[in-house]
Length: 188
Image (cartoon, rainbow, N blue to C red; front, side, top):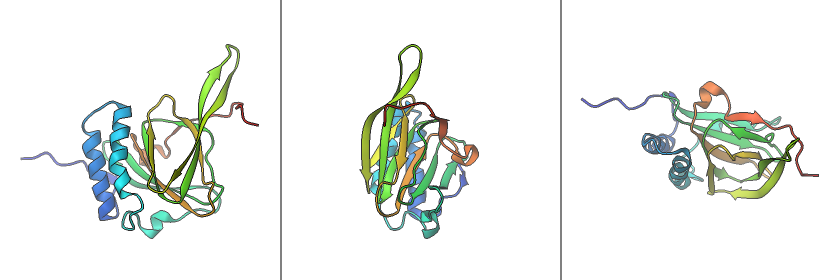
């Protein structure tokens, strides 16, 4: 008798998305360190980006007031989630870090990102911008805490859709954000 495979809380809605969830499950089940897991998950995500059969039209719907999150798949054991974020032009996140490793891939459009590090002079802490990145359709990036402080936005003229795979149950947590940073930055 074989052991049953994990059952998702949120069921993948397309055959391609179900294949992606299975590929991610195979990586996560290896129990590797978070940074290596993120790297390997990114390799699995990249070939699916831009495919017309990955998401349904409803999973690509935005919101005029803020970027929109669609939880596409959440593993029952909480080990990972797949989320689509839909960004209309100008929509952005606050500066934040995360509860777990994350892999991001751009499915449509482009996603801008500013990365930060927290520095202290002994009396006060501030954020220092370390890198600006523009991720275009088909590009993947990933990270594992600590060192995952960033802000993301749609700096393009059209809608952007990105897939985010988190090492946590976003259907239960509601968000991947651990902390929002309100501190001063070195930006003008």
